[in-house]
Amino acid sequence: MTITNGRTVPSGTDKEQQHPEAPRRPSGVGFGRWWWALPAVALTLVVTYMSTAFGAFFAFTDWTGLGDFNFVGVDNFIQVFQDPALLGSVRNTLFLAGGFVVFTNILGLLFALALNRTLKTRFLLRALIFMPVVLSSVAVSFIWKFIFAFDGPLNQALEAVGLGQFKQDWLANPALALWCVLAVMVWQSIGFVMVIYLAGLATVPVELEEAAALDGAGIWQIFRSITLPTIQPSVAIATVLTLIQGLSVFDQVLTLTGGGPGDATQTLATQIYTQTFLYGAFGLGAAAALVLTVFILILALIQQFTVRDRANIGD
Amino acid sequence: MHRYTKWTLIREILVIIASVIILLPFWILISTSLKTTEQVLTTSAFAPPQTPTLDNFVQLLSPTGSQSGNVYQGLFSSLLITISTVLVLIALSSAAAYVFARSTRKLSNRVFRIFLIAIVLPTQLGVLPLYIGARSLGLVGNPWGMVIIYTAMTMPFAVFLYSGFFRRLPRDYEEAATLDGATRFQIFSRVIFPLMGPATGTVAILSGLLVWNDFFTAVIFLNGSPFMTLPVVVYNYVGSLVSQWNLSFAVVLIAMAPVLAFYIFAQKKLMQGYAGGIKS
Image (tube, rainbow over all chains, first blue to last red; front, side, top):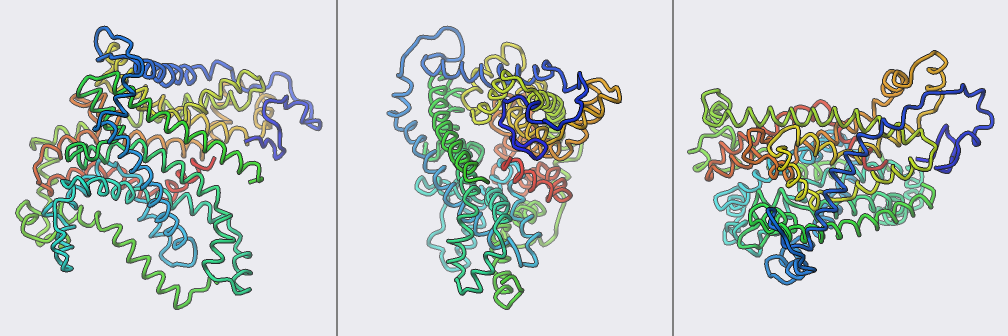
């Protein structure tokens, strides 16, 4: 980002001094007017910053969205971490986010490695694996709702291979519903992670791999000592992006289970929606949202550091 | 190492099998949407329809159908809101990013940081006060209210992406155009902006898909209004059907069709957009 005209320029310094050979810069060159940026800045300040600040403020009140409100200190936060249903939703959110990171990254990396080179069908398969990424998660979740239904394809398949005793209504089982939600999330995002890893794999030097292979290194050895170190930045980006995406999961939960059975699959995002827009507990919803925001901000900070490290290595 | 050997063939077959398993839901989606309600109950979900029928689609799309109003209206709202947002976003974000990329003032760097921080602020916290604010302005259930909100939601990332592209562009273009007597606005709109094709494409694709597929904001602001977008229409309609999967899947397919059609023609560009938008 600090490269101009192929030369590195520390951002914020006067560019004129860095161009000693720049010929007779015509005076009054038109580089736009400062007020062209006003609409974008104003929109971001009002819609994003002001509303977020108000949201954080109301997290400390008992507002119902209408009329007066009182300050209740940290009562809402105590409730988020004490009320079994709300605490359960914090736990579910962390479980889904963690599982989402692990499974999408393993599967995405496997597909990226498999479809990186050589295979004749690689372009077709890449396009097909990526397809669910661009589709509405509400729409694809409904396909899976049928797959998990009692008379649905999953049970039919189990019966066909002689595992009929496992037949059940998958989404109605409190112990399994969360895993079902996770499966749908992972299924839809394998292609997304695969594309990030494919971009990383494109930077792995082929000659190095070939030389290692000639020297008798095995596939696993080559992967561990050449491939993995080269795609480290992709690992960092994919991990943080999937973690953030996993923490704010909403569509799949609402579509597949509606948060049920009971509250078995409620997440922070569905609680924010339920508490605020269905129960009118505006303050409580805001507190849950603030907890989610803090989780995500911490992750964003971590990402900032990993990206900075990458810049230092000289990527 | 990269020659095609017997083992490569085995690997290729294994990957194809894995991909087929991953894509099975799409087969179930299509075949079920072509079945009658009775066939769904009596035949295997994996079996192709014995006598494929378009009845489900006709029922949803024919002007006399009870649901066609909702489907067309959802399609219209989604198109209206997505296209308007992308156009407004491109105009505002490219102009802003250009100013930030070309300015040498300290202040502009500080203001630019507003966008960098906003990229990571999640929508969930701000959406509640936003709803109250929009309600008092009469913008709940209003497509233009949604355009404002979506434009703001996608703005930070768009400004960030554009400014990277502008910074890599040599200033020679502006200098030459100035010598030719072009005004500042002409330089930007006729010389610089047309050079930003790849950036504009990436911004349009990523923001367009985000808006088109968004459910969280749409269900809060538009549910029950005459401007529900497709995800909300699908959610309400399928929720109202009890296990009529053939009809459900027909509406799911109709909702997916525009993006799928676009994907078939532009899948390479789309994948690059995702990989490139993330990397920069």
